[in-house]
Length: 157
Image 1 (cartoon, one colour):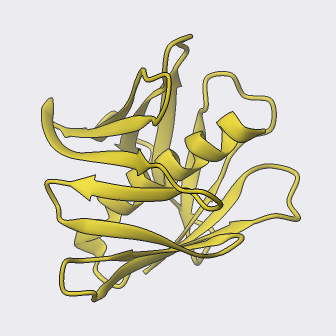
Image 2 (cartoon, rainbow, N blue to C red; image 1 turned 120 degrees about the vertical axis):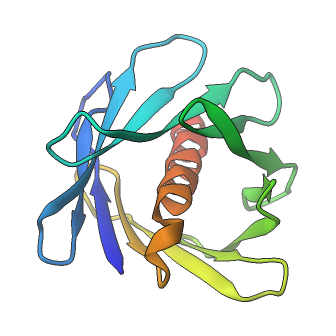
Image 3 (cartoon, rainbow, N blue to C red; image 1 turned 30 degrees about the vertical axis):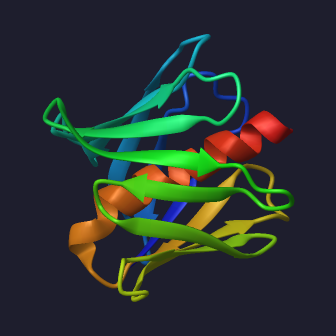
């Protein structure tokens, strides 16, 4: 499964759609404005059916992000200290995010099997990501991870 996350330019609320390979909206992201961290809601496209929400925890050093499904914390994404490249771990799922090059991340499970790849397009007017997710059951988690990576990259701008 391929998904494409293309954010709107100059959007304070972070509202945008996530599309499939046929350019059909599959998910919608709706954000809440906050000065101390992002809170983004993931909906089935064109519905009010909230699938999950993603909340950034305030931190002076390394940011962390929590994924909630039906108000239950299911995973935490934490940035680890790294000299050159951002490095992340995903608590509760046992996954690891590895930066392969300047604009590509791979998500591995504890057995080093690939869960998904996330590619950021650099020559784009807005932040645009391609998500390759072989198992559609992982889509909510992979979208949340892409949002966490985007939040970290935004703070470095």
